[in-house]
Length: 90
Image (cartoon, rainbow, N blue to C red; front, side):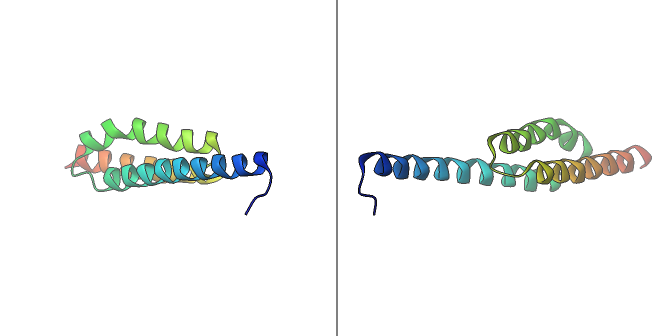
């Protein structure tokens, strides 16, 4: 365990950040899961900007890598567009 006051404080701060990052990461993963499981194109298209915003915030804060964020957004955009195209055709 840490022996200096500043090191103890740093450990406390790191724990707080870790918990916060875990919360935001889990919340975003759940939002992505819910978006993928959306029953219709209108719901999916409506929720898409919110989920993309969550992903961007994670990348900005350094919780996930910017390339991972780009890959997630790309995959979601493909899924949303495919669902929208299928709904338009049907």
